[in-house]
Amino acid sequence: METYWLVDPIDGTTNYTRQLEFFSVSIALIDKGVPVVGVVNCPKLGQLYSARSGNGAHCNGDRITVSDKATIAESILTTSMPYETNARKKVLQFLDKASQEVDGIRLFLSCAYDLCLLSRGSIDSSIFFGVSPWDIAAGLCILKEAGGQFTDDHGNVWAPASQLCVASNGQVHNELLKLLSR
Image (cartoon, rainbow, N blue to C red):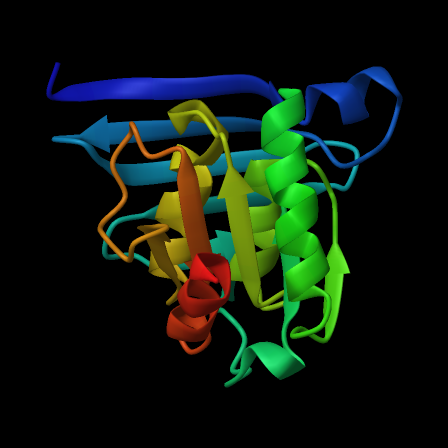
């Protein structure tokens, strides 16, 4: 399948079931393994993020871009919290290290929303543990169009099979990869 739609009807399912506003509907068009259209709707927040390759990223029609923070010491980091217990332990170990290096850590527990926050410059970096392609594909398109960077944990181009991913404003990306590898 070279071109297909990838839909996450509710990203942040636990947030949704607990009536927390940090959930979204995420839709991406994938062409030859690359997200080329991304739409993330956050209905409780009244935010609609969108991007199409070569046309920039937008929130409610306004152009958005990533932050200009140059170091992880001045950056805000978000992360995912997988359902599997051993994976959660890895996240907590990473957060223990990261808490000593970054300006702050936030957990919104919606990958698509995290990528949108990163795309609009509200946060500066994200690490995603144990994610599925539908969790991140639309947000990845939006992030790329907003000027951000997204790789696997080794700095390679994202592939749908990637289980550990790093997203950033681009400026803190290498520092984040080094922190993750420690």
